[in-house]
Length: 110
Image 1: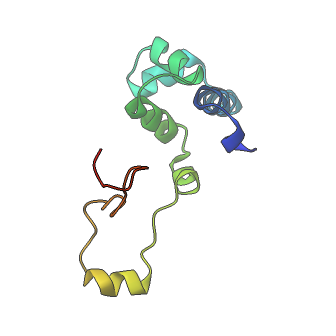
Image 2: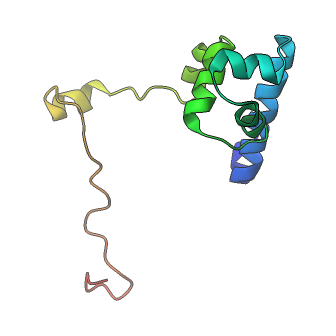
């Protein structure tokens, strides 16, 4: 699936449909899943519509035994050995942004 050609809402809807399909494959009703996760049925309905909170999404994925899929969803960032030497073993805390970017006039003022 080409997610880059989809809108954000389209991706959210696709994730909701996949969660619904997983719930149905596990033969769980929305009420059973809501009870297991300790949220309302409306929260489950919202997640399945591609809406809702990340905390609810994580709880639902945990309950359905699919947490191992999160590494495929957004893989952990690997630090290259050269970058590790450059950082001297410290973990990066901030992004530097684009340095030296100027406006179209080239005077460096916004």
